[in-house]
Length: 348
Image (cartoon, rainbow, N blue to C red; front, side, top):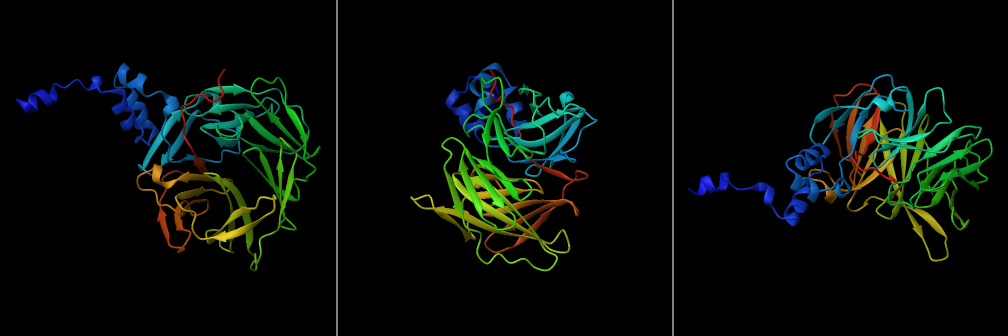
């Protein structure tokens, strides 16, 4: 009799508080969608704006080129699954950086018509026509960074331009930095430009115009035929700089992590660290994403998940010990990390 009563239980009558507790543990977006599809009560109790933190996926192919197929393939390393999602608005488009499920894109032959596209729900946000001439470096701030739609550095005019909600055009900020000699990053309203020759980091607040200069990293030695790349990332309010050292063999990649130490006067320096706490870093050949490890089951803290390009797969590297573990990837060709989202960010 007790078994029969259990089978007859009306699961749709679960309290919203209980449903929210369950939904917060659905770190695979497909499970979140299925959960909301059970009934109206479950769907109304778990809006897509309450999507729990998502484990990064891998998107197949080189996104820095135009797509001819509307079927996009994603791989979830945490669930070892391949997802094929139709994205008709991606056909014939060039893609660049991504943030919160959106990617910046433009038609193959019309680079002035830029827009943001969510690859999962096909939500499109059209940006003002782009008429700036010169090589461009794009940035997409995350949803918790100042509410800016997009940032772009234009090399010919040495200008940083941004688009904010409600504006009809791009806002122009003079930067006075040459992209040929700098690597640029945009984090929380701050532009970080790293001089490739001197190693000096210049930090500019785009709101106040204040500038801080960070000395180059001490004892940064480069071996014979070794190439060094760097990433700057915000890891839960802590600014990290990750140096990627590539030996003669492109699959022999070493990582060194530094933390930005700033004092009350605005002076700072890069300090080498072997422990980034509860953070985990997801790095490909173009970008770095930081996530909180305790938001996910199975993810290891204080580790780098590096997406390899030549011998395809994922390496998990312990920052403190250097221990590595390799995970195969069933997708073909180069790819990059992508954080899935169903939210319609910045929608009017």
